[in-house]
Image 1: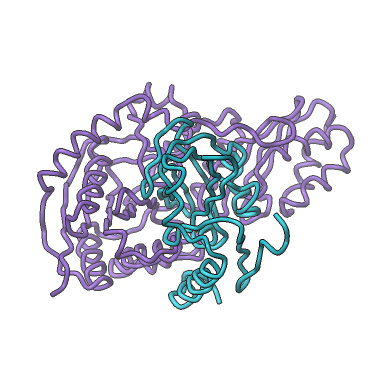
Image 2 (image 1 turned 45 degrees about the horizontal axis):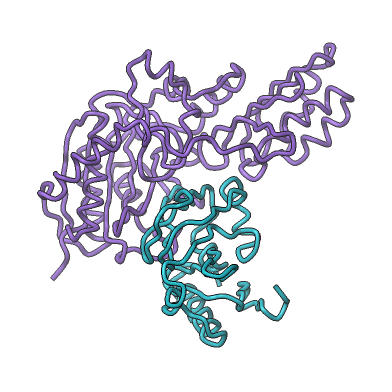
Length: 154
Length: 342
């Protein structure tokens, strides 16, 4: 990814070459026709706390947008990783499962979580944030909101 | 009008039900049942694994020979020993009622428990690691998770604690590491002298006040009873118990140290490499106690142990470099530990 495709917003790196699910902080990046890579953005990682475990549904499992595709554990808190798309799990990132810190160190690169074959190739990404200005505005607003609520430090 | 906090005291429950009852409540709360604070006390000792933890962390032969059921829960944390001397509370709320940041959510959900300890006469605090402590000592274990659209935090009032058995259930092949684990557990985990009835009443009040709830005693809904039977089956299923299994080693040698967390920032490790063996207790990043073995030490064993005791974990490898080939083997063993957790 070129440097202009990544910006730093109030201390958090944001990649602009992909789509985002605004509630869950999951990013979606097409990498082959009908297939996408999915990960969690830097802000989502930060608000989760230090990651201790990541686990994913097996390859071939059906994905439903808004339903879990795996589990994340941080500060003894186990919570679902919510799929931003419907389709099928095509690959899981074994490296990040073995070393969850990879998602913290490189959330938009080596710290990807799963790859999915999309159910509807033309429409699955329509509900996601895709415009760079919209993505940046959403990210700025989220950071302000989290700081106001004390979720992240000033 | 204030929302209701449903309060359910299940009293003594079988090991299985002491877990599945509150999981059923989580599904109920997710489906629209009110926020719920429940209590139970296991009627018999057993062992419980956190959602992601491997069965290989437990001495399953010991557990079987001693009639200790092993269960896996849907919330986080490590393997724990539970018995009738521990009163468990579980607070379950709709996810929408809880802050989005997990640390904040956990703090919000543990503060009422801290208040209850204080009402009971124990000046407990919630420390920076989100553990409920009395001074340096952890007095309450907890785990948390989101199940469907409900967030649940479980914790316990430890009336008496069987440190020996809590250590014995763990799979620890090195007797030195077992001794170190037991010593640190005795030093850093302790019961809290609080009357359980006082604690229960206080925690109901504290949660009601913190969230603006009206507390009302209640019982399981029909949906939750149906769910309970399904979870009973799930939790006794071998596949569920086996879980995700051990994570493969990530070290350059392909080996991985056995690490046991006693409480936040308190660990033991046991590691070996090419015949060298090191076991250590680590307290807040410093080697607290250590035992080493290597065929080439020729009477220098105590000297190595003295050199390592009291030093930061990131100084272990350079210190061992001063002990020739045995030191290099011991350093390689130590390098199989996950330093980020020490």
